[in-house]
Image 1 (tube, rainbow, N blue to C red):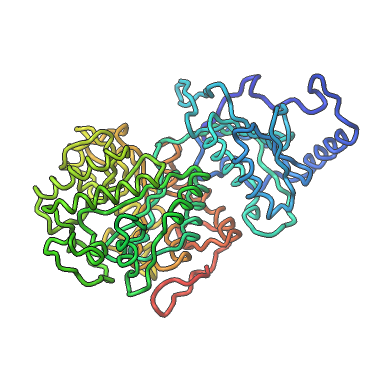
Image 2: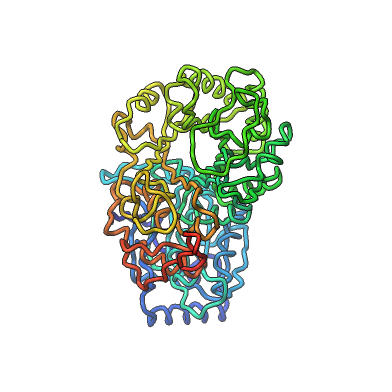
Length: 566
């Protein structure tokens, strides 16, 4: 793995007894000496500095510089980074049993845990040629010495990602909910890290099957753990409408009570949605709401038949077919509906994106479809949001900033490439690589196989920057892994389909292409099985990965879905 050079200014912090103007107390000196003596006798940290997922940009291990976290440790932080420090403490307290108090104010040159927001631009060598570039909005530097751990970043998001790295560098038991007798060692050395792509996400389909707020919040935590920064919520479809809209109340009250298989469905109130957005924002995850138009609208038509082409209410739909429903593109009432809905959703969403869907409107003639999309794009732009849509929007006229989400299976897509030439950017979600509702193998008890079987190796072994013919890497905004839920009914099943493929997609989005190596990734990923087990996360024990101890395979239920155990 490539390494980072160090300079005198970036070397290990001065020990406490060498700080100018300070005379440490005898008890403090004794504790420091005892800790150093213990570290000299202790075995190396059980995790290596390079074991992080996704792979950091630069790693410089120092096996002689391991740090051991002890019960008297405190977290020092600049005031603007206090919330990140609070979250780091929340992650570490349960398993360690340590109080880990947080103090802000002037930061010491060293200390057990120090989080620093740098006022000056952070620059580091970032390529083999030695060119220098900033760490940007999400990058960080991590330095581990026997005296302590320091995370430095230009933003709270960078500090947060650095804190997630520290979490991974501690023993796997750190993810447990109860105190454990463990040497909490962090491997010594330095990491300099920043993302390859600005958009790294996953999609959760809450329309086919509804998932309560607490489940969505847990998914947010899963994304944040692996430095993914966008959660796309597929909020509306034929089987259910999942967000309350005050100006059209029956959308949720009537359209929200069904789901695939005939369940009771559900919807998010405005307060629910705000809670999800706020929880995600604290973890530096942006929520991307999707209102799917003009197709996938049966639930809306059940609630408001006047939106249907024939003005006749369709029956509620709980199956899994697609392409049969659409709002009436010839009726002005339809565009008032679009403006009201996207206006309310935009007002509830602080992030820059609003997803219009746009796929599989099979019964709408091409010219009519294009005209509808062009008008809908204008309505979204008027709210101040940037339009995102599935790549079927490509033929429509470009609006400023438009992003197409490509979910094809053939990398030669001339319409999408033409849209890019006209100014569109892309989020890549190839169906045969990162659709996480696809089965791992033929005998996977849930999921589909229309795009093929997707094991962990297949999810990892492609390059977003070169995947589409005629699309330059600079047009790729990032990657997203969608999870459609026609056959996924519980949080445990969501996790089973996410893990271990989600970290593979996260590495494609975050890590430099030069670090991508299947052999190395599978070895690093193997250590995360114990972390997921400690955290109670259900996962698929893929035979692609050399797990240190094989977890139990989820029990197949009588309804042919996975159970809550692994």
